[in-house]
Image (cartoon, rainbow, N blue to C red; front, side, top):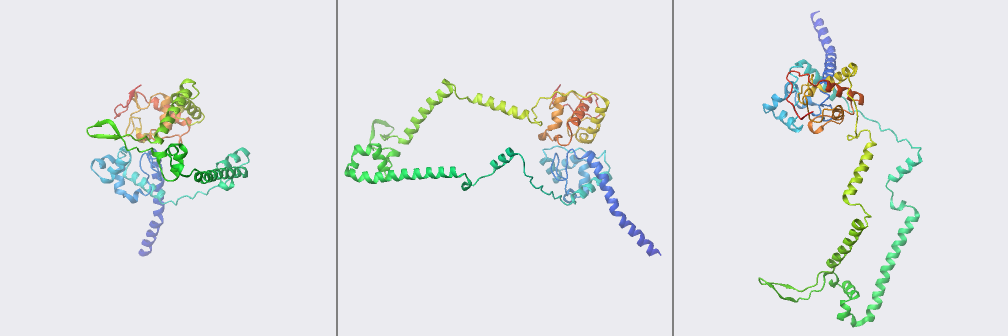
Length: 396
């Protein structure tokens, strides 16, 4: 009878274990959503590291110590803590030792373990639906790479004709050289012919590079001696002289085009036109960070209460439950790092400041929610909470 009772108790305990673990993970999810989602994700780095398999990499005891007070481990020289602190821009993690018990933290770890063990979701790729818009279909077809042989027959014929003409021209020139050069006989070696353009081209084809390099006279400049150094009176390379003449012609054309007739736009004008075009394109985009907004702070109790709930859920982990500042700056004084007007606060919340550890919230909060939390932040001004962080930024 005693053995049967012990077996029954053991069986009940074994059956109850998964339920307890599941309950721990459920409680951990609630704590995680309220305190950790602003800075952490399971699969991707945000302000802090991705937490998938963190229990395997560090162990429960280390994680409990780190979550309770990460800076204690950093200051103690813990290798892993210091590495994380350095990797994530030295943004200190808030200390949860006073707000979360060891059991709360272990529940969070149980939730992380549960999420880490979930199989990766396989997203089925939706089949491409054929478009019925002829313009869209034409644009999509234009974006595809077209093989040379798939070009229209007219283009292929044009390319072929141009190739034949070039080859025939080269063939005619070669035949003319072969026909007329023997007729010149030894006269091709006359200095007058060799110094002419036709002679230089002919001897270039025979391996004489005088047309390109110029003629080496091997004559020393008279009265041109300095410390025993003498110079030969050789020609400048014709290619160099040709580039020099071309640059003179180009400079004259450039001056006439841009400064005399003013047909073309100078760099300053081009920059201003491009900036205007960019402004027009950006204005057509709803997520333009430079767009001018004219929001007014909300003052009704319902909106401020909603903003307070959003702040407690998403912002308190870094700015403190009363806005006193922890990892992030103090939001209750008159000093602001990125502007203290409701429109400036709205943009800071919406687009974030990734370099400082402030994540963008535009994908998680709606426009109305961002305006509510921005208005609530303004309402905290002058509340003077205990243990407020020192002022940062400029006074508004």
